[in-house]
Image (tube, rainbow, N blue to C red; front, top):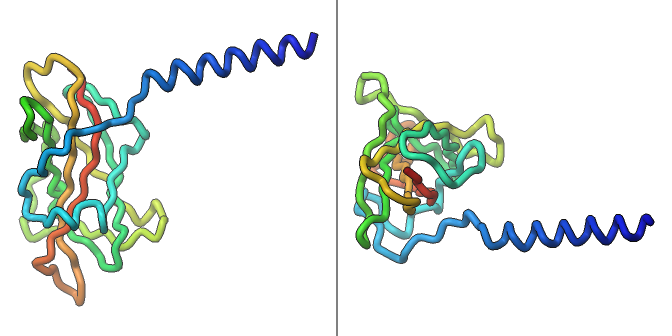
Length: 172
């Protein structure tokens, strides 16, 4: 009796694995050049890393989304209050900038957020919230979220720009 239950459970497990593999949420985006956001292409995702707070990669149009910003580099990274966030959808074979409905407080443009190297410590990472919006979105579409900052070293912000992006999907 115990062997039959084990076989049944094994069968159900394998069946679930088979179907979940066919319904993957992996985001694969076309090999289209990145938009020019003032960061060298070779610098993207080298010193910064983005990941969704809740681990999901599929979001609804106008859905609040919290993203963790991790500094993988050796120096602090400074950001404007909105982390320099920019959101793009892949439509008609190109990256199209879309709206972020989050309203950030009006502050002095010289006020910056600074994130130290994380060294794997979640308390040393930043969080940015976005609400991507594209009117008339009809189907699940690849989305790329960028965060852009500047290296902060020797007590001042440098001209060295760094950035990262995260791929996800946006649904109607």
